[in-house]
Length: 435
Image (cartoon, rainbow, N blue to C red; front, top):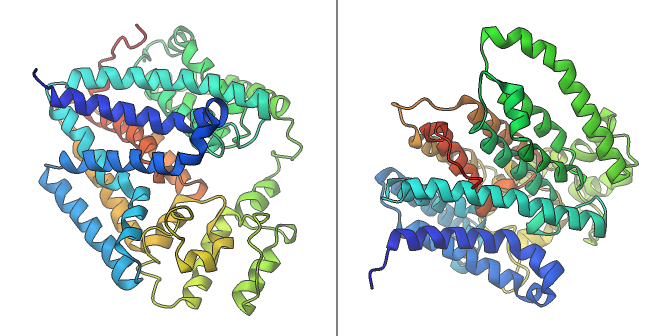
C-alpha cells in the first residue's frame, strides 16, 4: 500500500496540535485520571513536534539558524552554567517554536498538498474558535471569571487563549472583508464576532486592547474612507463601552479597572501589600522569602530586578542562566538558580523576561533572527496583507511585557501560519472553509 508521507506528516501535526490544545480541559473536566500523566504526555507531544521539525529541516538558511541556536544554547546551559545535557534537552521544550515551526510550514507549503494544507488549517482554526466558546462558557459557569477560563487548554491559559481567539478570528474575517462594504462584511460574518464574546468571560483585561485593534485594523485604509472612519469612531467607542459593561457584569470585577493606578500596581510596580519590601530585603540583605505561592512579582518589576540579580550572580548578564530554568519539578529537578530564586521566577511571566533569564542578550539576537526567517515566506509577486502583519507585531510587543505566549509551540504554530499567509498573499484568495 502506498504511504502518502506528506499527508501523514500534515495530519500528524494537526493531531498533535489538538492533543496539546485540549489536554488541559479533558484532564480537568472529563478524565481526571489524565492529570497524573499530564507532564509526561505533553512532553511526548512536544518532542514529537520537535522530531518532525528536524526531519523536514532542508532549507540551508533554516539549518544555519537552528544549528546556531542549538550550539549557543548548549554552550550557555551545559558549559557556562554547568547543567546536564538532559536538563538542556528538557529545557528545549520552551524553544521548540524556534527550531520546528518554520521548517514544518515551509515543507507543507512546498509539498503538493499546499492547497489542501491551507484549507485544512483554516478549518481547524475555525473549529478552534467554536471549541473555545464551548469550553470557556462551561468554565465561566462552573468557576466564574478567572484563570480557569483557559478554554480547551485548561486552567491558567486565560490570557493566551483570549489572544489566540482574537488573532484567529481577525485572520478569518480578513479573508471575508469586502473593502467596499466594511459594515456589510461584518454583519455577513457576525458569527466570527459572536465567537469573540467568550474572551470577556475569563477576566482577561488585555481583551479590550485586541477588541479595539480588531475593528480598527479591519478597516481598509484609503483617503476616500477617512471621513467614513471618523464618523465610525464614536460608534466603535459605544460598542466598546457596551462590551465593557458586559465584562463588568459577567465578571463581577470589584477593582476599578478604569483607573491607571490599578494597572501600575497590578502589572508594573508592586505596592507594599504585594510584598515588595520582602523582595527588596532578599535582594539587598539576603533575607529569606517563603515560596508559599502567595506573592507574584508584577510583570514589569521582574525586568527592574534583573540588574540586581545579575549583580548577585556575576557573569550572566549576556549569557543568562541556561535553557531549562522554567522546566522541571517532576522527573527532572529544578536548577539551583531556580530553587534559590523561585519567588522571582514563578507567576506571571512576560516573554522577554522568560527568554532573557535563560539565554541573556542572545535572546534578542535569536528572536529578531527568527522573525527575519518568518519573512522568508514573502512572495514578491503577490500583495502582502499589512493589517495582519501589524496585528501580529502589536501582539508580539504586548507579549514581551505581558505573558509567556511564545513559549508554547502549538500556539506559535497557527500564529506563524497566519503571518505566512499574510506575507505570501495566498489568503487574499479566500476558501469556503465554513462548508
